[in-house]
Length: 309
Image (cartoon, helix red, strand yellow):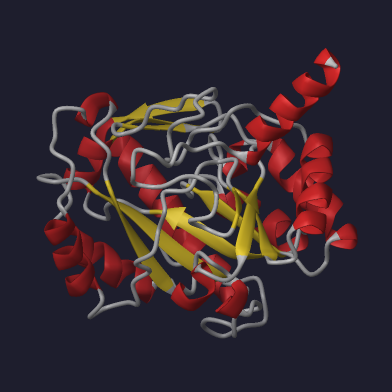
């Protein structure tokens, strides 16, 4: 799974980004600075057994959800308005609603913002399947922070988590699918770290499936150059709807074990693909009265009200 670095770095480069203003990499920044997720990436190239993606859902705060998919041009309009309204916005990200790298619009959006918004940290979230293929383009687009979701490194566990993988026009299933995905994830992780990108590994904690395995995921991720790890409790959906949601005690136990290997990010809000603002100030939260109203939906309502007048 090793890959020869194409950069001049020997081992991991010094990261290109100051994490002190990245709310998804720094606990201190999480409550002070904001991010903009532009939902330009609808297509996904894998099927996780815990995932259901719905585009028009205003009341759910979880990955893979957005009110609508937008074009790169629409994304730029939103970015301009957002940074004008809130100077605390420091990070521009693409986190779906599908996989960032499975959509040409992702890199097209980043290429367009390089000149107009040079101070925004550019960030993507990916399953990693296309990471080795797209690493050159990612680097050229000025993306400096990268999140890869790695839920397993053992094929016996990984094949339980993924239904299929679609790669270069061919569909893979079972263990073959997981082995291809995991090879590309780890190859891409190592290459990204060689290039000085700061890599966060997300892992979905699935009770009875990978809960006792995530320490090994942490070790392998660290060995391949990951900077930090974020363990996300599974929501009982899709093929795993029958499983119990992890308890706070279970989550903390696994996080504490993994913290002996790699730094843990403990403030994750399960951000939507269209989240904008400082985490926790989006109107999305764990209490029933905090209904999630993303900025793209608010903008749509404002337009409708103007038209009615």
